Image 1 (cartoon, one colour):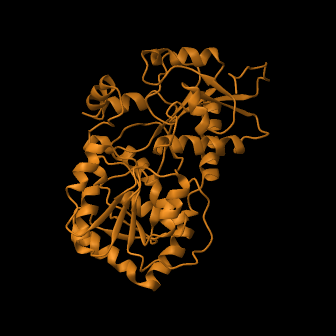
Image 2 (cartoon, rainbow, N blue to C red):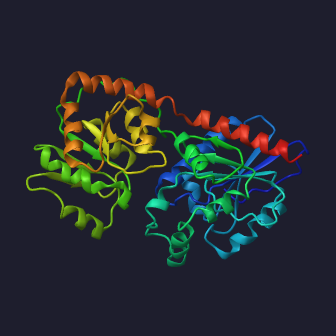
Image 3 (cartoon, rainbow, N blue to C red):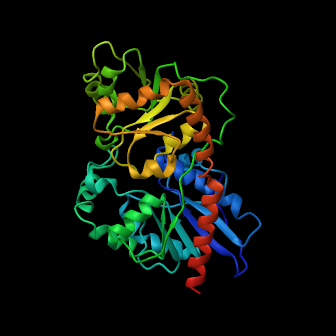
Length: 376
């Protein structure tokens, strides 16, 4: 699809630009998937309305992971050209701009701006993602030394989207902004599956899907296997060689850990189909998409006893102390009870339906209309 060409529009059209420049080019990470799924639902929600949506990309390869829509190619969000983003979007006739992050350039803007906050994890765990350029990593560390830069960035917006109620509460707790905050929730990409026909309480198979940053606390999951003889932990996500070697060094004698080094959607579904549970020992999260995805497929989840997981899983999970390997193992062991496994499988599917992209898109439409009305 070529760069969209714009014909004159009636003045009542609300021209919305959706910043999709954090979309990956080969496979999604959490923010990339959030943006892609939300954009697809937004396009559906505004069909035959006065809202016109155009995606902003910086690499045409991103289009492979985005829904079919009008788009415009601008600079990378990490480029020095970002300081001119406000001017560029003014020239394109933007009325409201939505970004899936909070770092979008906006100097001189004449449009409404909605920024997104996913979490505040990196204030307590300041190690930046390894794939960022070195200069950006330095700025990342400096940015998270205090809340002042965050307050400055959010202060530029007309409204703020939070991906969970937990994140919204943290924004209030830390007084990060006086602007209105609306929950535009994350959700599972796949729809809730049918009722599970096979009870996997005796499979003794665990699945982990996620990153390997320190707060993800994969080490505790591996250490817990000393208390779980006969169990297998499948680590499904991509991992670099040095990180894998460090984790392998922690595997207890006789324990079995399988590193899949990345799986396709079909392979991941197959792993979940055969699993007793999805597990995560995260010490903090902004949402926890793998938890929702597993519940939607009827897979019980054994997860950390933290606020965000209680928000998304409710009573449809078993919870453990993420810093206590023996408690992790004891909690997982409860799922060998066939009746409990079946109850949590059904409860998880019901709970997963509380989060869906159509509802999130409607919340975003409400924000767009509110921001546009406030600027008229």
